[in-house]
Image (spheres, helix red, strand yellow):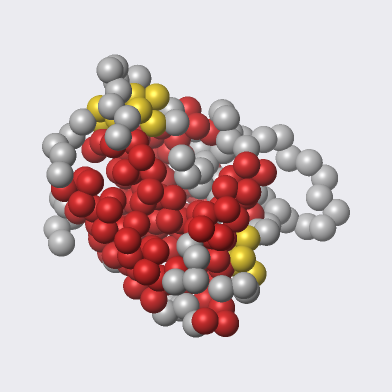
Length: 227
């Protein structure tokens, strides 16, 4: 796939990668710890929402374009992120995978991909407001990429992504970093000049550092929103 793959093509590639990861989870692995308070099952359930929300939002046409870019989506939803609600939704989504989670994830992938193929680039009503499908899909690809790495790490699989998915996720992360005013911080870290601040994430507003008797923040607890 070329570096100029469409948002729909990148989304499908990332979705296929998730299915491949889930296919290699052993039967004994679903209740193992994965990310923060989530088990592997809850993490897969949460990640599956990156597929189901596409279908859900395509059924909700928007009258106006309120969110002009993918980055603006993340900036908007960050103001209303509720980690506790995200955790609970993930647990519920994990339980909803049922006794055959791979079959469920495959079905979610198929429905999402088919729904995207069936349309052009409609305005959809998302958690952040009306936006083009082509601007929303990169948020789902990003979610699938980041949590794909989380899932691979939790289940002992290779922490690699399709190259074009990695490229797209890094590009979005860089744009978010710039919009948040952290471009220099990231550049210094990427070139080995300085470590990132404890708890640094492009997905939340910068917070004032607080005393942490346990040491640096556990970055495994950061979870991209999935609306």
